[in-house]
Image (tube, rainbow, N blue to C red):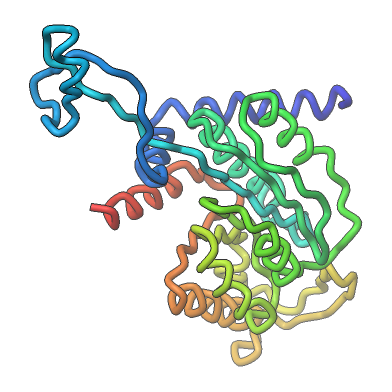
Length: 291
């Protein structure tokens, strides 16, 4: 690992720890419940304890009321599927999509590590670039951070279908999957597999959008390049009927409908903007659904 990567990781970890000072860590814990309860210890009865937890044999031996204490079982995988295609290098802001994705991935990885969840990471473009098997601990978290900054993808385009196919093939039980991408792909390509993934995992889509993808400026004729295909085009941003904004909006609407039809959460993150409140709001929605 070179010094430049070390500096980036250090800066990102500092930023992530600041995010954790708020309610994010607690909200994550509440939003993603464990799979059950496991025995922790025998302790003395306290006012308000459930009488069904009283251990009568131990109570008779100790000559005082003792109860069994249980803790939430969190034998769980958190899998981050991170889009590293060429479109992640685009931005109309100071910060690239890739950098915003890295920050969100770091925040999710860190809070999962703090809560003793196993973390796995899939890096994908138009192919599987790298797979990091789920594991626990801060050393593993550091390995993930290094990969985020040092990985040099060989693919250029985005293939959501390929990524979801790989995830389905993992057969990881009790797993949460966060797919971090701009989702620049045709809905028809991955619609069927997304439905399968939703049945196998707690699947969450995270869509990273630049401001130009939600409101493209009217500036007349503009020369542009497709980062993924390498093609160059001249577009007329003033053409209302065939505008880029209309095309981008139609794609987002199609994605929204797909996720809604399969009851899959889709969280929008704006590139270059603070995202912690967006994550907290998303966790709160999940918490309310569980009540």
